[in-house]
Image (cartoon, rainbow, N blue to C red; front, side, top):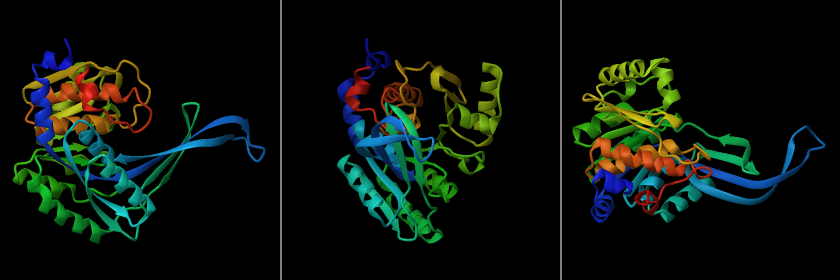
Length: 320
């Protein structure tokens, strides 16, 4: 028996429901660049390895990777974000359009598009170089206006916070979405969660949750801390992803835990994007939070077996 059968879901019906689901992703987008090569010597100039680059790849990262996962699972994804008016923004938009994502990108000539350049040799990351700027207040205000304009066209909103400044108006965005009757899912950043109050669901990972709630020494302590935070922020639910321990959904009805689906962990980067993207799409397709979590857990188990910023396809998910 596969996962869909265990969950009582019909493959054809679910596929059709996902195809009609519309998710608006708002947040910090970035261009992930990978330079793959080989290392066979140490530089004579300094005690560092010399990487001879043989192949280069570009992928849409950050909030754009959330949208990629939604599109890969068969849903309709729109991405609203601020980028620079540069070559990287053009490359990012091209990549997203190739994936069937509707792009609503605000170009700000005063900043550079965020780029994360990774040099990889023998399946190991040698170094990562980051290029980033914070968007201006004017362009963010313009983005908020567009957010209001397109909100009604979508079933669910995902706010993907990477701490780059793109979600300065997050509190107002939550208010507008809830007033419009749209569920709001947030991948949080930092230790100030008060700005996320009133959201439908927060999806911190284990270390992010510990930064806000403090450490715990038992499952009972974890549940108490999670439920206290959920009540304080007036959230419908809180989903804590716990790496090799799986994930736990906290609601007023209690806590629901699922062990990890991962068979082999190769690279955890981007797994959080897959979780929130799958959760948002599943809710937009009319599934309950527990069912959405089951699909998200399975999808995350698939992407951690891939290198770099990766996505889970509908075919892979349905084959679990």
